[in-house]
Length: 520
Image (cartoon, rainbow, N blue to C red; front, side, top):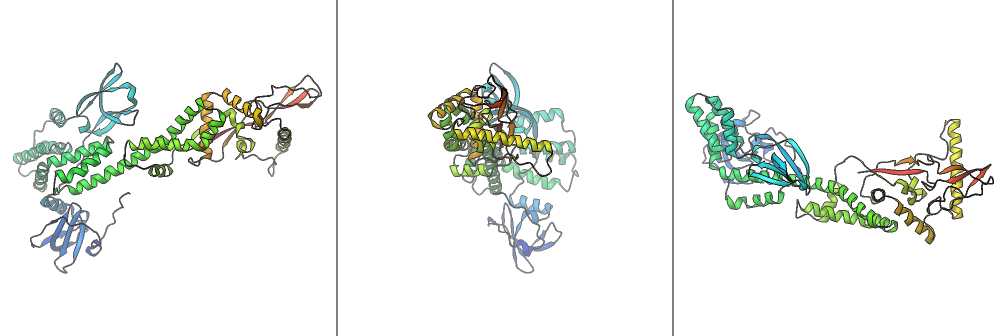
């Protein structure tokens, strides 16, 4: 569930609706002047404080308001946070260019590629040099921006910075301190700020006291900050379960920590990142497993078995495989959650699957379903269009007469079944796989289908479904054209005059079209 956008409220009465849980006593009864971002001023006392805000009682009315930090003047907000022990852990992170290796199991290795060869890629990370087997690498991206601490140690970064830009005055020390905060080297940062003030006492006089006080708090809480930073690194490495486990242990390791609010916020970020990535895994995996399982079926199944597989079992097998993939990133996932993620998937590009020369196996009605063509000429059609429509109607009637006579049905009787299976074996494995994917995508309800389907003309008959041939018998009784294997052209007969015969196309079995569908 995504966080709601904040709405600016202009009065303490409206702010009283905000609910903040008590965390600690904060007042000794001394009146405090509270400055709001709107410019308003209120006198009263801070009754309680939490990482998310304060509970403030007005002096004039005695009314109590639960007030988020975001509504307090920024300078006073920083002062109060420092006073209560809440430090800003959201300072800008230092990023560097790196290489990212995506492994075959979806995991990632981030660092600098320093060498490769002998079946391995050597990568420098902040933990040292690691060798990644080349066979396990699916993709490599260079110039990826990642936090510097994923590649270098703090000492390496500090030495590199000192060599490139050694601080020689107060401004240089101030910049170096900010750099050290970016890499969580708070002791170095505090030393730099204190040295800047010693060199130039009036340097940034309005800012430095508060900055030194906040950095001192950070030094005191260095271990806790590093703990949370390690969790954030686990999140970026997509080790979500481990990150969430460490966050669960945080209150036990650091009881009554002022960073509890930061822990809760980081927990939400890790959970959101985990859900977003799992959704990507589900979406990519559903397409990948559809194609992979269809290819496996195409290599070992006959037509009847493959048809049943596409109609009933492929959905179940894909779901099972995707659930296994998703659980690598979230062990608590249930099957119905994964299915819901698939149903709620983001819109992606359309993929293509074709029935190819096996289009006729669908039967005439299914093979031509969704065709924009009509047997009747449209209003205002030209004379040529009318003649073409009339010819197509004659062809349709001819094919229908063959079907009625029982000479072109590939799916009728034992002999027809044998012919269908024989034809299926003549198709390449990739063609059979594409047929299974197309049938599953179009009929399972799991995919969104682009309408209308693409119906390309048969390359042999140019979409007519029949071909004209010259036969030796001028009466047109000769059976020419090869008859075909059990398709619509199986056992074809010719009709013609003067040696010209019309035969059902043996390539498309009289369908005239190759059906392709786009799905996502």
